[in-house]
Amino acid sequence: MKKEYIFITVILIFSHIIASAQLKDILVEKYYISAEHDTDFAGMILPSNSVTYRIFAELEPEVELNSLFADADHPLSIESTEIFFNHRFAKKSLGKNFNSDFLQAFTTNSYYHLDSWLTIGFATDKHIGIPKTFDTDGSIIPESLVQVKHEDAGIPISENDGLALADSSMLAYTIENTNAILTPFLFDSVGKNFITTEPVVYAFKENESGKKVGFIAPHASNIVLLGQITTNGELSFQLNLDLFDPNNGPIGTRYRYVSKDTLTGTQGSADNAINVVYSNKLKFPKKTGCTNPYFTCFDSEAIVDDGSCTSCDSIILGCLDPNACNYLSEISRGVNYSFPELCCYGPDNCGNRDINKVCPGYNMNTGSTLNIFPSIVTNELNVEIYNSYNASNEELVIINSFGVIVLKKNINSTDSDTKTLSFDLSTLNKGFYLIKYNSKGNNSLMQRFAKL
Image (cartoon, helix red, strand yellow):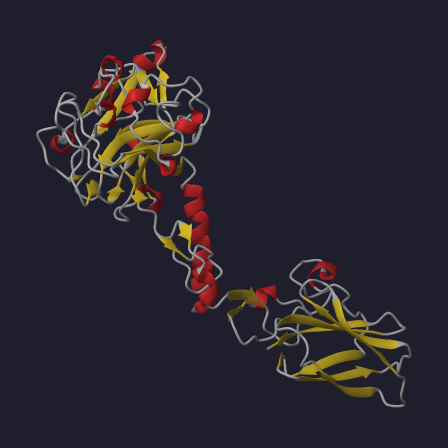
């Protein structure tokens, strides 16, 4: 049952990697952090240490973003522990409806540019929102509006404002709110959460053939702005994206990436199929944990590795049959899973694999054996060698996991075919080792052991 579980786990891991091909990541940028006692000219107070976050979807090239969506099975939420900041004069809940002329009109004591809103691509009626690190054309935000240049916010917005002037092809996009009510992103609201099961924002334009297509960012990295949220609370969200991949299948494939693992798989008819794919990348804050699947505390939901893998057992897949030349001896720390199909017993019984690669130095002479005990060593290792040829110039070497010979011993020829030796290994470091027996007749035998 354990073997089946591991196989299933490996399959699921690779399935997730394949399934996430259209969505590379969700990026959260700290656009601005407010100074102490920042106050707008209209009397609006921006609380100290408020953070303006910009949320981006990083998509594969040519993948189209159709909408930010939600339904009864996949709600969308954007929440904070404190209220969203909304400017008195902005009164817009969508980025494309934001009047860019006001950014330069207000030259002192205004936080118009820090308003909260959702979008697809557009940060103003004339500009595409891009990460500040991608911005090469300076800033239209007056220096006088940047009260503080907080190092945690990276590049000051008075230097790079994260705005790229949209050309005519980009301005052809329609960006509209659908059914969801975006009240928390209006000034009169004191909202600190937005939760909906209704469609939220969609984007489209007609291409040369008259077909409606989704939004593609005007740069090769295809990083698309989804929203700007200003708050002095802790931000969290769960998003859902409707995407179209024109390069998957003969006519392209539609995907819905969701942040809740329900009703996934292919939905709809063959002519109008939608692939619903769960992705933990759509959640923020990103969960921390063990991200290495070869440890028992692996957390498939974790995005950021916190180093906790080292505190749990490793999972080791291999052959646990001591009669096999690639026998993986039991170890004191770690969970072993034996797969008979991985065992190699000789040139004619190695699963159609090259025995020289599976068991380097394999002894073709069946008249020799090498046995060791115990396979988990604390101080003393016992070695028994049988060689019917009674060869001279024999030697035993012990090699550590880095391939370095840490011990070598020459063995004198005797009248007996069997030789028994003991080694004091108390001074060796903990770890995994290989013991190898070589004789004049080029007979080589190997065994593995662990040192505690």
